[in-house]
Length: 566
Image (cartoon, rainbow, N blue to C red; front, side):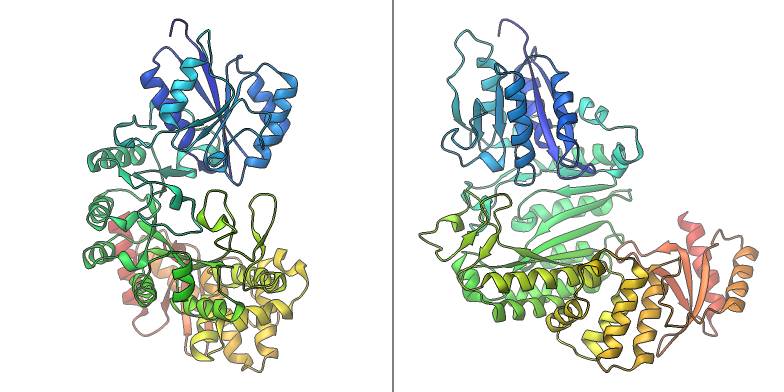
């Protein structure tokens, strides 16, 4: 290179709290191999006004503008890039990322000059260098390399950390940081873009250790590993988890894992983790073995459900499980069976997802997987599968609303345990019925008091004992809400005399516990004292003690423990 040049990489995150590493990986590589080249990063979100993002882009010089493209931002990328092309016809526009990695030409994106397919660091830097030459490459599609990325430079540079804003929501401790310790996936699930890749490459464990230490030292509170199947290499996963376990931090580490690949060594490490240190996202997808076979997913379904229950029972890590509706050969009745079994695992969150026909994934080949009708625009969700009608899928979307409100919020734990374990109502039937009971869409945007009220009315109208239902609603409201959200039809049974007694003990012991309430919950719960200064780091439930004859001793022990850990 004879003259310094520059480029701008634009990344449009799904939310402001996200901090995508892709742009910073490209920049770090360019900084290493093109030391005189100036590579800048502009970060925004899909919730920002397009004209404001365009204004910020045009403050940059006249070098290439490069967009990182994903399924959630491609519409906004197109809008901004087209406007930029109209305003500046000579500006070079480059697209890269998963959403454009399976294009054969510029046909879908005529406003672009170049598309980079696949792993982009090396080919991106090479393109930036050639654009400065007298003979730049012709417009078109460029193929990324399949190089092992283990010796690529770290994206976590001084500029990376300087890019965090000073505003509350932009500071590093309030952002979700993504971390990539491996690329690729050893499995070939037909619905996943990773099935189109070739093998897996890993960062050296010492580098992983040093980078995680650096992120924590800089103040990170949530780090999400983007490794497609974190525990595919079980010994390596154990080493990383052991290191995470030993760290002196309150940071939470999130991993995507396969439930049937957990080893006893890994279970032992997880069991010894401080509460809230790790959380796992586990893809069940379906528990129908023949459907799994159709999409080339190798899974021991018995072990999957057993291990999810085992992880949840540990009580120290948040477990998120996923299902996919619309997989080949799975009709509604089969999906309902998978749904009920998944609820039975008691993961803290169950995501009911819908199949998307991602370009490049094997399942998008209609000659192999016929019978689908798919939305034309992102996220390319199916409208009909080979075994589910549009009406079936629409019904599942309605169930998803009730699932998200009453299960995934986590704030109805005692009531749902009563419904599923004591009364033994089938989970899918419950969510479908409660959604039909309150058919107005307004409910799903209403306040928490109304949400509890609807649940109480639904269960009482279903013939369940009103006092039993009221006790569970009262327990949930007390356990998850400091400010009263109990429906007016349920008496609170607050015990103010007991509250004053507990506050007096706290004051005498020098405790800073102040937000205290006591309730006679009813049923088998009895009277409990709730401490709204202490939350469970996994369930987010407020701490409580039974108001029994041993309350004073337990309270002093609680105060002593908090003093020791403060």
